[in-house]
Image (cartoon, rainbow, N blue to C red; front, side, top):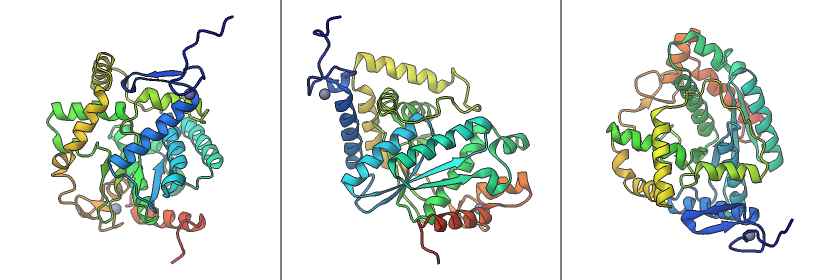
Length: 332
Ligand SMILES: [Zn+2]
Ligand SMILES: [Zn+2]
């Protein structure tokens, strides 16, 4: 077989593994990795996501997106001088959670990143599967509530500056379009590259804001990252309105390379407008002290209803002890 005719990388003599049309680049494996690192670095600078000396808690599910995010941030943290700590929540969803936990433990060990591992079943005596069985609430909404609470408590106790989430361009844009069509404008305020910390609410950052799904997939593949390749058994069915919008945006991207990033940047420019009305009327939970819309936070309410008592205070205590054991916070 002749090897004389393969396409060469835009920067070196190596064969091309991917063509990035919006950047007019053909890239080999090495230069693709550099391209993604540079892109995330620029995203961090453009939206001022991280500063030197920051402590960033990265939420890692074990899927390709959050795994790629941790890998990229771990590489950039040395260059930019910030600290990375991983958080994984074992949600108690059968085999899926068991596999995810093993994957995240391996990745953190390989990268030398400290891992805070929280086991929901161990902490409150019930996993997501048990809670779903007792509740009328849809599984993903219930799971989201639990995850948000545990992430926020952990970040708060760690005195982290922000929680980094693995949401990429193709996760976020369909929700932005949907929220716009339905005129839920303040929802768009939650979907940008950054939401600020306020008192006990720790801000979120999305360093993959301008990275597409295919790019995170390729990145995880080329870095041979350990990932759980099955999806959560509760994942929403195909054919949702978000899927339709995603297909539409990808069709436009084919005809107008760079359209999705231009759209994401335009939305980010108007973020202050969309954020108006967010977080108004938030106070502290009477039981656990975390953010609440009434005198009881959503997590304390949920556990009170399903398990007989508000578990927030116990959870905060457990997480504090875990962080002391890991020597990530000092004993008071
Ligand atoms: Zn190259
Ligand atoms: Zn509470």
